[in-house]
Figure (cartoon, rainbow, N blue to C red):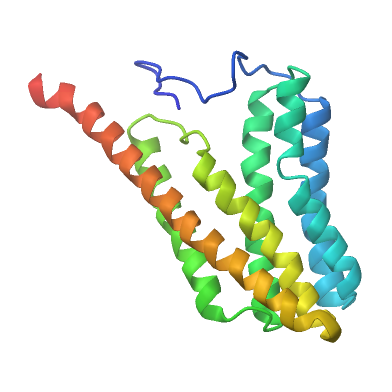
Length: 210
């Protein structure tokens, strides 16, 4: 997280690598591909009603959530663009899936509202940080775990609604993943809010003693 222009906070944990300015790297191409999967999923699920193909797109988008970051560290291709694209792709997948699933009644609106409320909380925190000169906080492992659980839950829930022969088992597994993901999503959101509050207090302290 950075404070501009007065000082710099510690950068996100990227091992011993400093994020570069590369654009055309393998992990960035994977993230771009994940972003293209969002409108493809919406078309397959809401327009073409090709649920099996939509499950495949969701499963690929979810299972590659960690691939871009792993490859970036492995090939020493950690970049500032990649640090933006990875969480952006995660959020777009979650939001697009929630909207589509709610529209077709795969998930209840209450579950969607709980996840969207957390996103609004985080957006408010980011706005406050930006007003005090800070950038977005680094992604925490709790948030990454929550995202992984949610992205794993969505294709299983879709499978439960599309395949009646495995509906009971798939529904149980999918909702177990989804509820754990929702809980951890809010835990991570609370951690970001606490972190933002500490930074705001630190930013105001010099003004109060001046």
